[in-house]
Amino acid sequence: MPREISNISYIIFDLGGVIIDLDPEATYKAFAEISSHPLSIVTELAASAEFFKKYERGEIDDPTFRAHIREELKYTGPEELIDEAWNAMLGPIAKERFEKLEALADDFDLFVMSNTNEIHVRRFLDIARYTSPQKRFHDYFKQVYLSQEVGARKPEPQAWQVILNDHQLTAGEGLFIDDNASNIEAASALGLQVYHNQQVNDWMKLF
Image 1: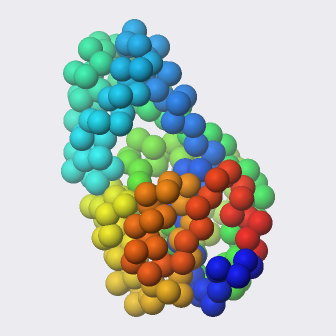
Image 2: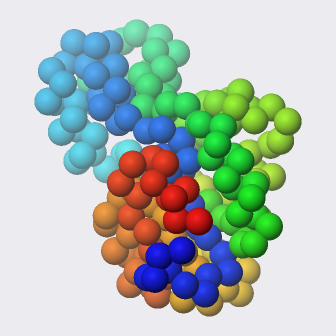
């Protein structure tokens, strides 16, 4: 492993952009198409509207999230198209990522900490089952932590602290892998070793 990563006993993975391909622009385009709003308006909404963060913390449910989308985008069509547009950002999971996780589990405790939501999780698990029909996604990890279940989202410190507390882990003995620079900075401030994933498969070259 690179010199800056040493003496780790566990690894915390992000999902999007690390384990699953992620293309947020595809969701922005899909919402623009179903709402007839310009792409720039949809992109601005995604960056600024607080209800997205509330949804990721589990503070609002699926129907409330969809109602916000309808209101903001003046959308009057079926809710199925809302879900499809929202899930458009979720791409495939390459089989070799599961193979690498299986190998790493022999030497490290593996965890997930993801900013996500119920609609995405249902689709994500379908994608995982397609790639790995022989083994459940959760079985690749010691425990999977999802923002809407723990009530905190990265880069809020509690998103990682709950893992450290639950398993009595020392921050300095853990590696956190994420594609978001703000999350990397926050995890580093907690004492975790970190790796900023630039391309989805980059983290596999660490080991």
